[in-house]
Length: 174
Ligand code: GDP
Image (cartoon, rainbow, N blue to C red; front, side):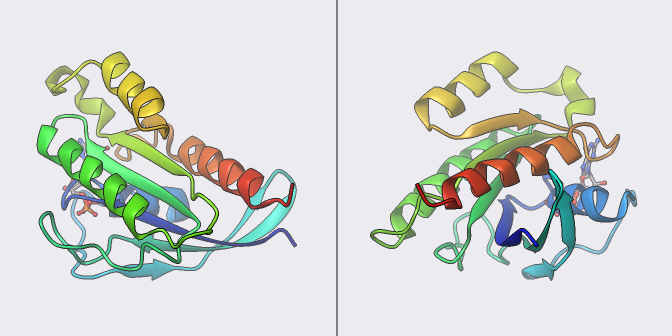
């Protein structure tokens, strides 16, 4: 048994949080699913590098832009999702990252943050070059960066793998 990890998938409404989680867990992509009207919790067991991990994946926090997301303190790893065609959703990710830093209890281990630009299939409508955004996030914010398409299941598995590997390395005693 590998252990347990609490993951929160956060971002503005409509960026594709539920679509990403559903692709990862169930391999499906309903064009329309019911909007998430509050935090939703999934508790899958996943196999990573030969070990089984009990995950708890929180889909959103029930708070929209302008409201304070809750439950940031007791999370081991964060996926902050934005839509590559929506600059506002990127701004919201910026706010979330600050909130996470502010609410982290003193002495708590740093939780890895992976910023994910979703809807990569709509590449022609993107608001900024991938290189610029990736450099800002990686060098400026010191977070991971990845783009994916939940619709075409492109890089969805990879994003969870990268996040979990990163969380496990940090959780391991030195
Ligand atoms: P959430 O509010 O962040 O959970 O967003 P949803 O998962 O409900 O997705 C919002 C809308 O974006 C839905 O209509 C999805 O079908 C659509 N969507 C999600 N992921 C993608 C994607 O990768 N590409 C495209 N083109 N649309 C997507």
